[in-house]
Length: 250
Image (cartoon, rainbow, N blue to C red; front, side, top):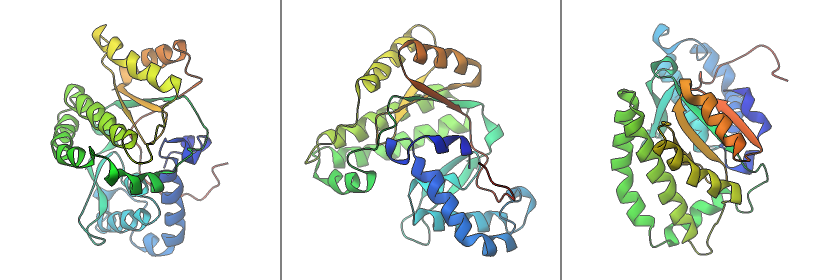
């Protein structure tokens, strides 16, 4: 996992729980995993993929997002039950120089955490509509990643993020995680695209906005976010996956 994310509060809506829970679950299972060479490249170890699948399954018990922090690069979390629900790699980190420029508009704890928010979602009249639309967005996102086509991935990411927050806004009671800075970024990104800057937004369940672009334009996106008044910007690329280390990170 990328230790650079630890300075963002876990409940600020930037999937901090993913790295935290993946690390905790790794520590608890490290003896068993070491025997299966979990910290070796998947392609070079006969048990690597099976071990990472098992670890992803274990991490999911702490946080759904955590299971996606286990494989390296681009991954997909799918499955219908405990045995089949884990994340698998669909492309290695070096497959595409996609960059996530994150606008941290707030580091405060969310008033309602993701767990409680999930329990409210079925009360939204738009909940079923979002579930029906997700397979199409997921297919577009998958094709976008495989083809390295931001024009396919980006619109799907934006549509799903807005639909997710639409469900939150219409739950009972409603959940409004957005801050003024959130709306400013959501309005600015399509404007930048019309100006020729290839960038799309997506969001977690929180106020912060992820701006997806290629590495070549990441500095431009970061600069525009700062000029917009975003107090903190974090730039990240595809992760290297969970691994064992023999030294403290801090």
